[in-house]
Length: 456
Image 1 (cartoon, one colour):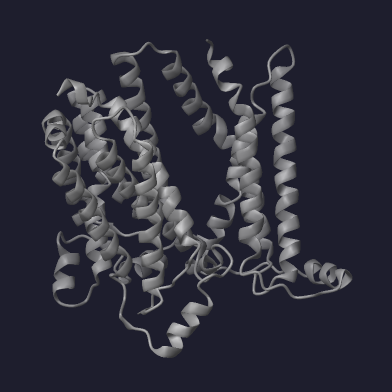
Image 2 (image 1 turned 30 degrees about the horizontal axis):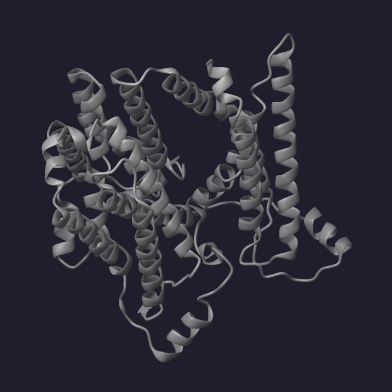
């Protein structure tokens, strides 16, 4: 089976993803859904006076985010039209890509025009320019990122079972993880462009050159639990790098990635204003990478311990405890009667409307953080119920779904009574999606790392 034959059936799915990205962009662009009647002629006149805004350093991240949220449309659409073959195949592909760019730009203008009816949305030439940039960059990102990943997947599908296939799966996962880690590290690309902005970043404490300075400030009462959690995650995020590198790369490349990636991540975050660059995070990243290597070296022994139900259950409980700390650690006090009533009234608001009240980057980070957190829980539940079987039993899925949804509801209801937490019933959808990602990741990991119950 050729790579083309493997990829071609995905064309429809890529087109569906492009359409879903467009629908999501339109919805996100009109929240918080405060429609204000306005005559069409008046709307046209108002749109014709759309201003160009002088954005400050603190608004630059949102401007970049406006470009990034448009890119998936062109990215997936370019993938869907990139299968043409024959004498004029390449010409047809470029023609389709140009059509995708123009259609996406038209959508950007249309969205900005529609926003005239939805205050307090800001209508500006800046947003139009950012959206058009995203419309252009999206299709051109496909041959750089999408096509190579699709080709790698084709090689995996065509590889024979055994060591060759496992190596390809592991290297693809490592490359994808490194790509996501690097992209996340430079988001939202609000780059520091002047000496004054460098000074502002330094003064805001976003550059830390003294190891352990964050923990020292926390002991003095100048930091919160979120600061310690951020430090902890700076080590955890490198664990998969060490783990995957040991399984599929030579010793030279293992050392390069374990010790080089944490330095690279912090170096990339240095010129990004809203990101923190810290020597402490480099050190913790090294520790996390080495921990990943140790876990990979002893994976069979650790997997043997996994046969004990009490241990698997303990992992789930630790993850749930971590979720509780992460979600409730920012609470400052109990809500009063008026605040509780307001939380109850807004509990069933339109999906994800509350993400509007903040920056685009903070909304995206919040969404991704919740998704990944529950992906960890999903993997822990898959391990709990799926151990000793080729796949999770139906009962395991039923119980896991009930636990995830129940925990999600408890979290959101509890947030009604805690200030300044924001309850939102729609977040339960994110939690369920994250758990599903965790279940799938666990199944892939079992195959790629050769952890088979019958071999122990």
